[in-house]
Image 1 (cartoon, helix red, strand yellow):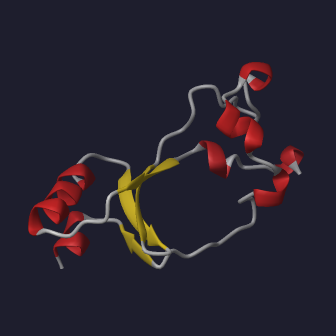
Image 2: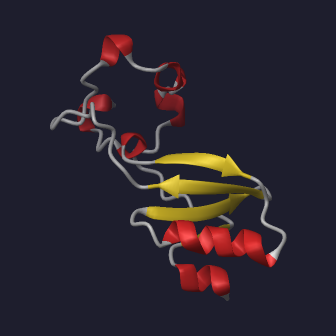
Image 3: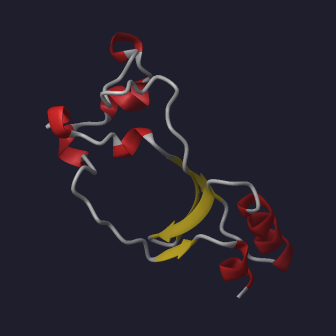
Amino acid sequence: LCDHCTAKCCKYFAWPIERPVERADFDYIRWAMLHSQTTFFVEDDDWYVLVHTTCKHLRPDNLCGIYETRPEICREYSTNDCEFDSHYVYEKYFETPEQVYE
């Protein structure tokens, strides 16, 4: 499977955040989105910040340049969870500060 991989999982990371409740919380999200490559999504009522950025150890052939010493989170990731042909849609996905404002 890795021979045909586009390394989708190595080109972003997502981190859970506290659910925004107050206007100031949403304003903070809007501020973060003013920085390039930052989006937010909601899944199962949990909020996440998603940063579209490529791992600095991803090789041009889309394989890991530090495979033997890669972080544990990478080691735990398996082809069972592979996103190669996934076209998953989030419950809510915010790509612009204007969407958050609405």
